[in-house]
Image (cartoon, rainbow, N blue to C red):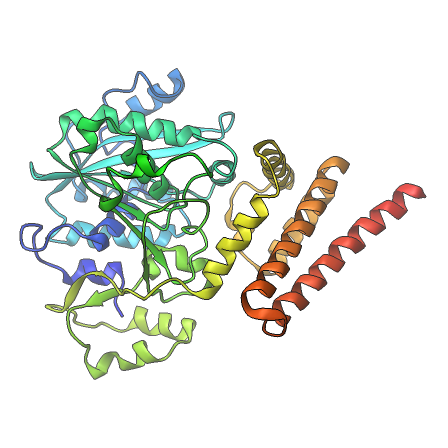
Length: 446
C-alpha cells in the first residue's frame, strides 16, 4: 500500500476538488519538522514568547514574504534543516511537496522555534496558508533531543507544560491575521499541542476551528480537562493512531481513536511515513507481493525500488482498521495502572531520576534510547551506574511495581494459563530487579 510520499507523487487534485484531509495533515506535520530559520518568515508577535535571546534568534530570519516549499529547497541549509526521528524521509518529503500541484500554492509563515533546557521546553510551530481559503496551524512533534522527550514525560505529572502554554500563545497571536477557516494539526507531541489549544482557545477562535488533527499524540494527565471542556470541540477532533500505538494511547483523552494500518512494527509505527494510505478501489495484481507479504524489511525494499502508478486511485485517508491491537490496549492499561501508584511529586522524581541518569551518560540524542541492541544495553548500564543511591532505590521500586501491575492485569484479562508468557517474562524481570537490589545491599554491608 502507498504511504504519504506516494500520495504526494500521485494526488494531483486541488483542495477545491478534494478537501483537506488526514493524509494532508500527515504531510504538513512532517514539513513542520523542518528548521525554517533564514527561509520562513518569523512570527511577528514575539514579545510574549520566552526570553529576549529566543526573540532575537527568531528575528534573524531574512524572509519577509510567506515562503513556498520551493523556497525551502536550498542545499546550503540542508545540513541543519531536517530534524525528528526520520530526517532523511522528511528531506525526501520536502522534494515531493515542492513538486506537488496540490501543495505548491501553499505558503508557509509565522515560524517560531523555542528551545530551553532550563525550562525543559522544546517547541516549534508554523502556519500553512492556502490562498485566502484556509490555514493549517501546525505544531512540531518531539525532535531527537533529550530536552524534548523530557518535556513529554513531564506531562505525566505537570499541567500545563511550557510547550502547551507557548502553543496557546502562538494560536492567539496568529489567528487574527489568517483566513476564517482554521485547521489545527500536529504529530506526536505536536498532536497533543493541537488538541490542547483547541480546548483552551477563546470562543471566537474555537468557533473558527474546522478540524483538529492529533496524529498519534498523547493525552493529558488525569483531571486536566473535564467532559464539559471537551463538549464544544470533541466532534471536530480527528485522532489517528497506528495499530500498535504506544505514544498515542498514553495518558487521558476522550477523543475517539481512528486506528490505521502501518508497514512497520513496534515503535516504528509511530512514524507517519509508515502509515498506509487507502486507495479508492482494489489494487492491481502488480501490488500483490507488497500487500500480501508481511515481512517488514522485504516490503520496505520492494516499496523503495518499485515504481507504481497510483494515479486516479489515491484515497483521502489512511487504511482504517477496526481498532488498535490487543498489545496496544494492554500497554495503555498497564501504564495507567502503574502511574496510579504515584502522586505528582513521586512521578516527577521518577522522571527526573531517569533523565538525569541518561544525561549523565553523555547522550544528547533520544535515538540512543531507541536504537536497540548492545548500544541501548550499554546506555542503560552506564545510566544505572551514574545514579545516586536514593534514585536507584526509587527506580528499583518503580520497576518492581510496573512488573507487578503488568502481571496482575495480564491474569485479570486472559486468565492465569493464557497469561503465562507475560507472567514468566515479568517474573524474570522481577528476579533481576531483586538480584540487583541484593547485590547492592551486600556491597554496602561489606
